[in-house]
Length: 53
Image 1 (tube, rainbow, N blue to C red):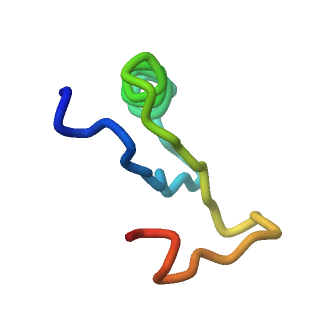
Image 2 (cartoon, one colour):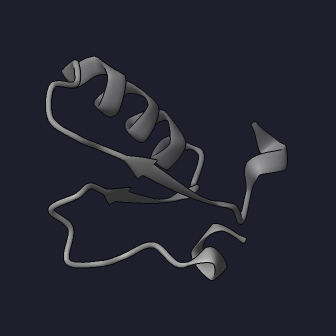
């Protein structure tokens, strides 16, 4: 995963997800030092195209 250093990932979360579907990838990405953001329909923050670059 070294090519993902200094990358940012946005994970979209909604109701009715399996906990491991969220937590396993989230923790693995954070272990690699990748900035992660959780976003769902109840988020006060709306994703911007610039957030994905």
